[in-house]
Length: 179
Image 1 (cartoon, rainbow, N blue to C red):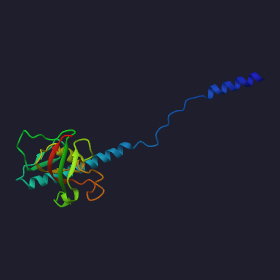
Image 2 (cartoon, rainbow, N blue to C red):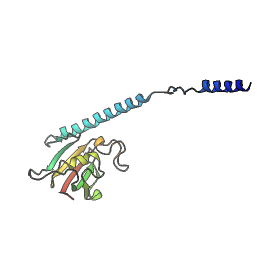
Image 3 (cartoon, helix red, strand yellow):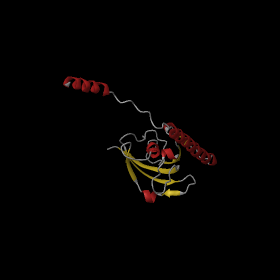
Image 4 (cartoon, rainbow, N blue to C red):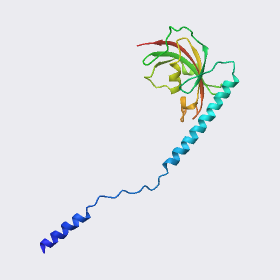
């Protein structure tokens, strides 16, 4: 009888050991969120590009250039000397800039921001200005028009620049140096 109980217990152990079955997800609507987000961002991008193109069309006497990085710019002061170089990785640039909205209302003046020193691609700076500085030579003054995705994006700067706000930056590059 004792052996029968052991055999019964052993048989129960063998038959009860089964790997758990995978459960089906409760809901699988993740693609809906992404599709709405994509549609929103495309509409926002189109709206901002149309506003920027309207500014460019209104100022037809200014020679706007389109950057491959997704923003537009024009020179107030251009240095034609080809022997001068533009900054690249690790160079330290000294510059001043102002920030305006698309209606040209000043958001941050040069007095508020002050003179900045920035090590190219080694410090935090919003995407558009980081790429814009690489296009400039020392002594040049350039105005950049940045859509919100190249400026402060979805969050803004948590102060005066609102979320999804395109901006205009007038930048003066004072100097370029190496370490």
